[in-house]
Image 1 (cartoon, rainbow, N blue to C red):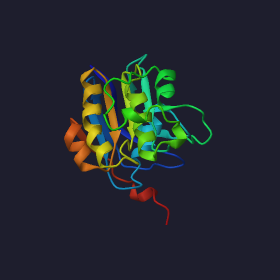
Image 2: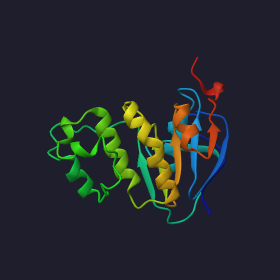
Image 3: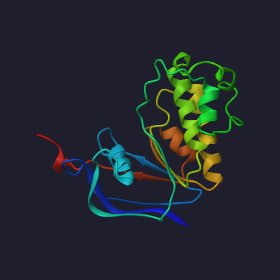
Length: 196
């Protein structure tokens, strides 16, 4: 079943950011959006959810009605002064700690602001992967992760897809996309829209 169908979509802010893009996401599939920095991959994700002023200039974006969407942006929210531990965050978001990588589980009793950036990133990503969403939009989920975290990521993504979620993944990490993605869609910048 197609959760998301994108046909010749051109998205951007004040003007188009990229050339037309087409892809389909079905349940159980992971589709990567790849391309150079500034090509419009994150903008395309924002347009898919109607967020932050990103808009569709041309083409079509079709979502199945009542599709539940989970979103992970590439920017971490500040946690300074947030008096939550990792375990409390998981409890608050109803995320199941079972299956967390062994390297992260011992740190769940620590406050979020005492965790490393990579530990916070993986924990935040885990809460998204555990959300009751049909479609997950993940923008550079490997950011801030060390080798151990990156090594754990493909299995976590694949497990969630195998549970029936469709995933759109923005990533510059070829190893990650090769390890877990069913398809890779290339996003090319709209050179005519670039400032002089």
